[in-house]
Length: 404
Image (cartoon, rainbow, N blue to C red):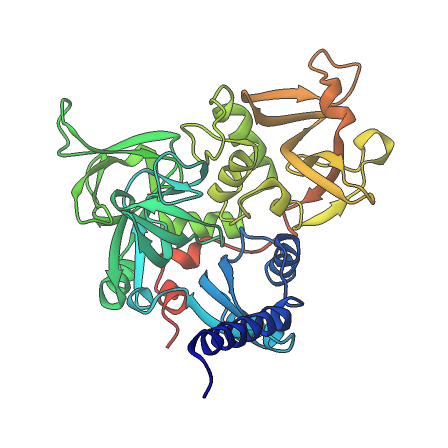
C-alpha cells in the first residue's frame, strides 16, 4: 500500500505537470497591442466612420473579446481569425445600434448642440449639430447618447441635446412644412411684442417646423414641441430654399456669404456654427447653407470634389474651391491639417484664430508665408459634389432612418 506522503507528492506532481502542459500549449498563443491595432486599422481604417470599441483579454488558451462595433461582420470575422490561430474565442461584442434604439431617431432641439469624443462633458469637442438635424442613436451611456450624424460623424451628446422620436412621431415631424434660418443669429420669441422673451436662440442653418404665416413673423414649433415666433426676415421656407439653391444658386454666393458675413467669427476647435467654428466647420457651414452636406473634417473634405491643379501660381483655381494645407507623411501621402475657401486673386478666407482673409501671393499685403509653404492641394466642390441636405428634413428621411 502506497504511503500517504508519497501519495501527496504524486498528486502535487501530476497537478504541476498538467499546469505545465497547459502553459506550454498556450505559450505560442500571444497577441500584442501592436498586432491588435493592426487588425483594428484593417477592419476600421478611420474611427470617425465606424465604431471599433473592442478590447481583448487572454485567459489560458481563451481569447475573450468584449466591447462594441457598428459593423455587423466584425465579430464573426474576429472569431474566425483567432479560432484559425488556435484560440478558444469567447465573443461578447455588442452590435450597434443596440436593439432598443433601432426604431428611434434623435432630432437636435438646441440651436447648437455639442458632440464629444467620449460620454462626459470634459471630453474633447469633436463637432457640433444644429437644431432640426436628425441623428441615428447607437447606444446610451452615463447620460449621453452615442450617435451618428447626417454626414456620418460619430460622437457623444448629452440628453439635453436631443428629442427622441419613434417612427410615428418622426414621420409626422419629417412631413411638416419647415423653415431654415438664413441670418447668422436669430431667436424664437414667445410672442411678437417688442419686449418678448426668448424661447431659444437660433443660428444660420437651424431648421424648425412652420405652424403658420403672419405679419413680420412665422409661428414655429421646435423639435421638442416648444412654440414661438421667428422674424420672417431671418428665415425662408425650406422647400423654397432648396429650389433656389438647386436651380439658381451660384458658387459666388458661397464666397459672398463668407466674406460679407463671417469675418471676425471666433475660432473654436470642433465648432460648426456661426457662433464659433474651426476651419472645416467653417467651410461645412458655408456649403450647408447652399444645400450641400460636406464631410466634417478637413481630411475628409479632401476626399471629395474634383482635384484642381495648383500650378501657374494658382491660376487654375476659381472662387469657391477648397484649399488644403498640411505636411507629407513618410512615403509622400498628404497629411491634411487645415482647409480654406479660395476667394480669388490668390486670397483665401478661413477660420484661424478667427475667420479672416489672407493671401498666398507674396506681393499681397495679406500674404501668409507659412500657409503658402504648407499648401498641399485643391478641390472643386461646386458642380462636382451632389450630396444634398434637403432629404434629411423631409418624408424621405423616414426611409433613411427606418429601413423596413
